[in-house]
Every structure is written in C-alpha cells, then in structure tokens.
Image 1 (cartoon, rainbow, N blue to C red):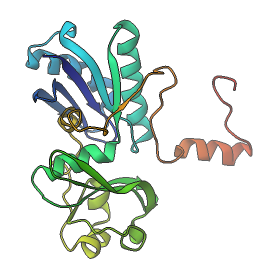
Image 2: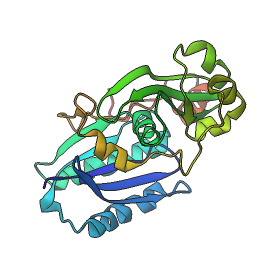
Image 3: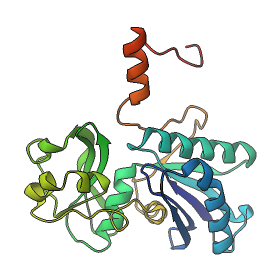
Image 4: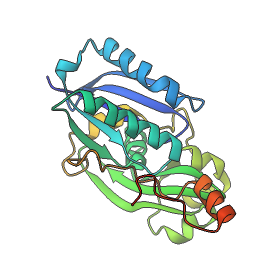
Amino acid sequence: MSLYLALDTATDLGSVAVGSPEGVLAELTFSDRRHAAALMPAIDEAMRLAGADWNAVSGIVVADGPGSFTGLRIGVATVKGILAVRDGLELRSVPSLLGLAWAIARVVPGPVAALYDALRGDVFAAVYDTDGTTVRECQAPTLLPAAELARRIPCRPVVAAGDGAVAHSAAVRSWTGRDPVGPPAGAPRASALVELLAVEGVTKRIDDIDAFEPTYGRRAAAQDRWEAKHGRPLPDPDGD
C-alpha cells in the first residue's frame, strides 16, 4: 500500500497524519503555535505509529492555506526540505478550509462553513457540501469581515466550524442558527487531507516544487507595518 504523509499547519493547532485513501494509520496534533519545534518530531512519531518508513511513502499532501502566515510558511518549508532529500515523492495540496469542512462533514450532514480567524475583525471563510464521496464548493475561500458573513455569502451552512467561528460566535449564530464548533473538535485534521486524496478533482498536484507557495489569503501584518514605516514596498529577498 502506497502511503502519504499529510501536514496541516494553517492554524494554531497543527496536525500530521500518515495513511492512504484506503485508511489513516496514524495522526498527531500539536498546539500553542509550536509548529517550528514540533512539526518534524510529530512527523517522525506519526511514521513510527503507522509502522512505516520512507520507502513506503509515495507522496506528501499539504494544506496550502489560507491561514496563519507563519504556520503555512513553516509547513511548506518543511515539505520542501523533505522533498529536497527524498527524490520521487509526489506533492499534492488541498485548500486548508476544505480540510476542516471535510472533517466536520463526517458527523454533520449538509453545507459546512469553515472559518479561520484572520484577526482585525476578519475571517478566512469557505463553504463546502459533501456526501463523503464528492465535494461541492458553495463558497470559494475568501477574506471578509465576520459581521458580513450572512450578507456576502449566499449559501447558508448548517454549521460553522473553526477558530474564526468561535471568535465571532454572535455573527455565526445569526447566520447558521447554531452555536459554532470550535477547536479541538472544530480544528483542522491532517487525516482529512489523506481522505480527500480519494475524491476526484479535489487535490492539486504540484509539479514545480521550488515555486510552490501557500495561499496566505492576505499579506503579513509585519509586511504592512514595514511598508508603512518606510514608505515603500518591501524588497523581494530574491531580488526580483
């Protein structure tokens, strides 16, 4: 059986899983924004728990955003590092909000809104409807003020999940008619990324690994502060 390593570092709660479309063999989570220190040990432990070595791994699937700027950068940098020393592994990506919605849809039928807290009163939001074998995108990932969820997103979900749903619970209740599902139940799960490999047309194959970057959803606050202070765009570190 060909295995995949799955990583989701889009929020404060990170997750790693090992498995195939036929089943997940191991999954670990870590929190408190410890992604830089915890990610590689979590990968090693997930591989150990799965009883797998790298010879059995065919590829990596990663949540590519939107979400935490730092978390996403750590996840993608780790993936690139692994692929640099292990030839022949396939890389696939999944929108991070879809991974969360898929995990919630395991137990809640109907359209699910996935909301990550984007700070400044905003949320990263998407709505997906799935029957466990197909996915319908009701609302593509977007950044918007939480207070405008009901007005700006035409499809009404049966439930909203994620740290953004909890941070803006009043807006979510008026939109869905129910309390939000917050972490840990309403948190991203790397196991969902593994399961989504079996859904046709959902994961995206990344061929140009060097050029691959996450979908951050907005610019980093640090970049905005630097440019406001200096009155000019932040220089490109590659010199382009």
